[in-house]
Each structure stands twice: as C-alpha cells, then as structure tokens.
Image (tube, rainbow, N blue to C red; front, side, top):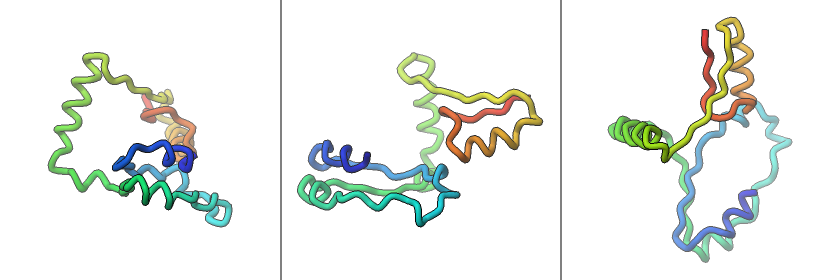
Length: 109
C-alpha cells in the first residue's frame, strides 16, 4: 500500500512514520519486503521521518488543548473500543496489541 501512496505524493511532501505496535510480535522472516520507493522519493524530493512524541514534550499540552477544542466544535471525531469489566483487562490488552481495537482502547470497571 505504501508504494501506491508514495507515488501519489506531491513534491516536497512529508511522511511521518510511527505506530509499529501491531508488528511487535511478528515473525521477521514473514514480513513483506520493502516497497520500491526510491524513484518517487528522489524525484519528488519527499521527506520520510520517524518520530517519538518525546521530541516535542515541551509542546504536548498545546496539541492536547487544540484537539480538545476541535472535538468540542465537532471538527474532529474520535473512536474508542470499550471493554467492560476490570476482569477483562488482559483480553483487552492482548486485543490492543493485535490491533483488534478501533481508536483508543478503554477498559471500564
């Protein structure tokens, strides 16, 4: 899928790379080979960069405040996967690691 997306990028586009938790337990020998991206990356002068949220820890609340405002205004919608029952926390955690949840995984007592 990334090959199709990369080829649709505009010149000087940027791609953030994060969120690999769903692949933590994958067998490395079964992972797909890297797509051929070099021509589009070079000719469109794209930038692909991995990141950790701690890089911007001094601005963390700025983003939270803005997202909360957009949620209240209806400009931003979010999804939660809610599991009821504290006793189901292990199943909810395992499901989250598998990618079974949509959006935020929440366990309610």
